[in-house]
Amino acid sequence: MAQNGSGGGMELELVEYAPTMEHDINLLQWWSHLLASGDLAAVFSPSAHTLSRFYETFQPPTALVYGADNHGIVVAVWFKPFLNAATLGLWIREDYRHRQWWLTVGEALRRAFRVVPLLLFTTKSPAASAAARDSGFTMLGTIPYLLDGEAAEVGFLTRERFCIEFERATGRAPYDNEVSAHV
Image (cartoon, rainbow, N blue to C red; front, side, top):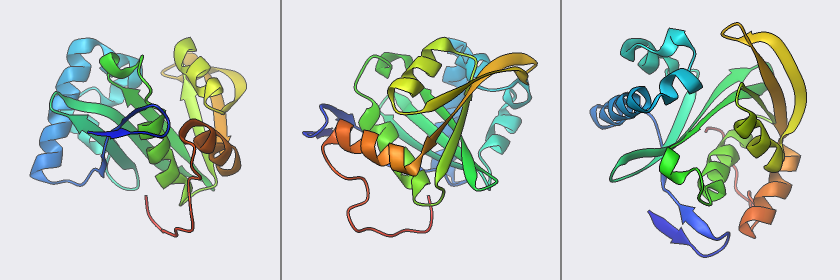
């Protein structure tokens, strides 16, 4: 884990999930933590609660990037292509939720915005909705029955708005003359 002087928080090195022994063990430990903490039911639909379906969730075309420390995955962000956008999934380990996590999440979003101009976000959590709004997402409203038969808020973040929020949070432009074609 590296301390980043600009932006005032810890920045974890992000890795992109690939079906390797090391990455699968990290996901197994994460799944076990999610199950024990109750976050599995809070973040994932029931169809992803079994271990095999959990792994299936992160297979292409979905891209998963995560940062870990010596206690396991700290931040996980996943994207799934949808029209000319991607849907966004996000989880932050409970002991990091009060910290400056924008640097790590911002880096994950930066990777996604290399590929798509728009991210879509849904949540049943008022706290997640407020955090998304504070991070530059435009929340569109609540749609009944959307997630697991329950109402959920829907929001979006454009690449342009992300660039403004990233620079405000980190003190640097997100794309400084770089070009890439993959998350």
